[in-house]
Image (cartoon, rainbow, N blue to C red; front, top):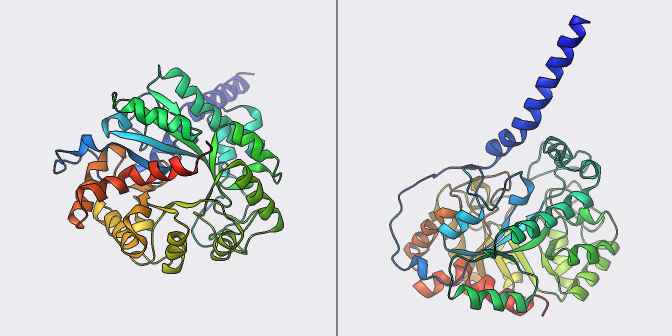
Length: 384
């Protein structure tokens, strides 16, 4: 009995340590920052940029209170305020494969199930990707309710216009929007679009790191195109005025969505082959296609996207896109908190401004790419 009690005590200690420590250790190991507390050349008009915005972050995946400043991760509300960031898209990651890479992945493993277990999320989150995705949506709305009005979730043109008007008199106000990274969380049922729309989701990427019922991933096994069920999904998204995100789409899926869909399109977080040639990034043909559709391309802040670990690398990619299709179609797509090592956290945005100025962009053009383009695109394409 003494041995048994000792074993049980040891198991209890290990379990408590796992649940208390493992989630934080996982996040700190996956969401690193290269340039922390860097002293940047000041931009005396930085705080007057009216609308700084970012198209993609995965902060809802982690067990952090985004209303409190954290030393971990890349973005939270206090750091948004420090960075004069008005708007952040919070994307839903519901399943990623073990051994994740940009070349070849299957859907047979599920790292987010283990993370949900370690975070002591509700039991249904361990087994249902739809449930865990909806709980992330609920969490963002909960932050808004608990923020005393300092943070809002935007779902319509009307709400965005009101936020912009209010923020003109209070630059401490912040806002977010929900997107989905990989439509596999619909669990194969297009009717679930209604559920996620009601939860506030306003853009959906059909695929993430593996092929699914709706289409092929650039990092999947088959890397196919738009399936019949994918067409039904596009139809439903267009009916609900949900924006299509082409990030992570296979080349075939990318082309076939643009052939089939009439809805507005973005690539929320990416790099370009013209400055960083790998499977993750957009070809010139794809960039041009987005330009013809008056879409937006969000450029990332991690090395695989831009082949560099500083703001200059991100600015070079933004210059490349601007030269091909225009300054008005370039945005930030950081992929903050997306299990990446970021050049900066969100408080490093002044470094991006400096790098854009060094690329020869004007103050007005820099403001457009730092968020004005996202504002204008959403004012035109969100549900009214």
